[in-house]
Each structure stands twice: as structure tokens, then as C-alpha cells.
Length: 356
Image 1: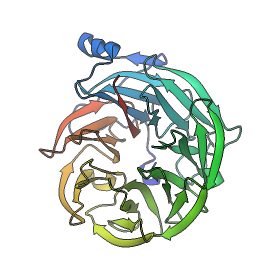
Image 2: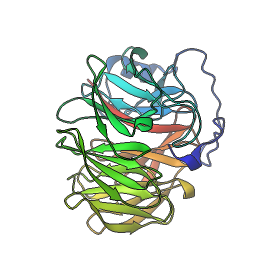
Image 3: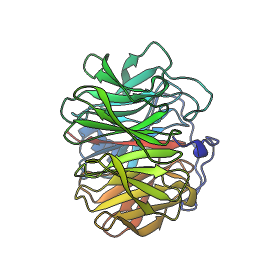
């Protein structure tokens, strides 16, 4: 979550579509639509899955059918509030850490739970209770061991959870405060955390469960992502118009990518050619050519783009826009906004659930 983007949760403005309001009077709100409903019931999607969206203002998880690009359900997360979401490797459950009611480093409530949502039942079916306020935030499944790794900010750590038993099975110190976001290498050996106000990235050895290195980047940073080949780590400098690029071999900042606005969330395409960058201060998404390490295109999106998720087929990027209660569907081939998906207020974290 960005400190600069803690906003009135009723703000729904978008210059693309008329403002719409919704009231959610039950834990699950289902969109009325026979075609979309049938697709959801059968678990069918021409795009092969479902987009999940953590709505900080609505305190809910949106389920979007990727084939129709329509929200088919919102599930109340029973907490205040989830910012991020991860999907179990089998695509059946979503894990939503309940962070609290404020932004990183700000006064407010200290979350202590992770809600587990069954995506077919569209209901909370389990809870991880830490027993103390630790502000769990970014959950990521280990690609090799299947364990759930989640940043636990108030303990300067990443906590490890067995998703079957919902028990804590380990912890890795990050060595710095405000370890907000986490990326894990595809071989499952390394983790990288963005430590916001210290402006550092912690390199974690996931096998020995230890801190391997701390990399100074800037006075403050936000978000973190890896290149498809795990060669580079990208994090957004919050004090200068640039992305910092970290060499994962030397564990040092190797270069910067100039940008027209402060960056936030990023995501690489599966072919390794491009990096999609959200720039919330100027309401744009950018495209970085990773062979040249430079920005080559920009695109207007609704207000305050936050997180980027590139669909597994590499054809589309989803961008949550938290001042608009919309997700922009960006066509990466034609480089245009193909559609705006209405979701819950103050939408942020994104995850992909493969269809059965």
C-alpha cells in the first residue's frame, strides 16, 4: 500500500466511465448475469482462470471471470483490511492477510490474521491467527516447497506458513523495519523484500531461512518484482523518478531506469522482454524494454494505478486503480486499455487463479 494513496474510500472517480455506487448487504455479492454465472459455476474460462482483487475500502475480495472480464462475486474478508492476496498452487483457495486500517509505517490497527477463502464456495473457510498484531501484508507461495511466505512488518520478518495445517512453521529475519512487499525467485531459493522507509532490499536465503544481504537503494522505496530469468530485481524509488535495478548476482544496484512519474507496482512479461510499470502520481502505465532497460511506451489509465499482474499467457496486464474502483485490462499486443472492470473500492492486490 502506498502512503500517498491512503484516500477516502468513497472516492470512485474515473474519466473513462460514469461513477457507480454499490451497497453490499451480505458477505457475498453475486452479479446478476446468466452467461457469466454459468461460466463461473462450471469453472470455465476461455482465458483459463479468474482474476482476484483485494479491495481495501470494501474489505472484500473480488472474483473476476477472465473470459468475460466481469466481476462475478465479492467475498467479505471479515477483517479490516486485506491489501494483498495469494492463490494456492491448486487454484482453489485465496489467502488474504488482514493488515490493519492504515498504511505502512502509519499509526492504526495492527492486523493479526490471514483469511482463507474457498473460491468455489466463495466463503471464508479458515484463518491463520498469529495471536498478536504484526501487520501481515504480502503473501507469496514458494514455487518449489508450496509453503506460504508472508511479510510480517512489525516483526521485521517473513513468516512461513504451512497452507495445509494453517500453522506457522518458520520465520526469516529481514533485518530492517517495514518489510512491506516480497518477491521469490522461480527456483525458490531466494526471497527479496522491499523495506520502505529504510530504502533497502533484504535478500533472504529461503533454504537456510536466513538474511543473506541488505542492499541500500534510496531514501524510500516501494514494491518489488523479479525479471522472468531472476537476473534482475526492480523496485520503485519514492524520492526520484526512476526504477532501481538490482543485479541478483552481485546483490547491488546496477542501474536506474528514468521514468516520467513516481513508480509503484511492476510485473515482467513471461517472455522476459517487457516490464509493465504503474505510475500512480501521473495516472499512467509504462512499458519498459528490458533488453535496453528503458521506458518505451506509456498509456493513460484510471486514477492511481497500484499493482500490476501479467496474465500467464502474456497477452494482458491487469492494473488495479485504487481511486477508481476499477481494474484496467491492458492489451500488451496492441498497447491499449481494452476494458475497465468494476470491482470494490480502493482496489489494490491482484492474484491469478487458474481454472480447473
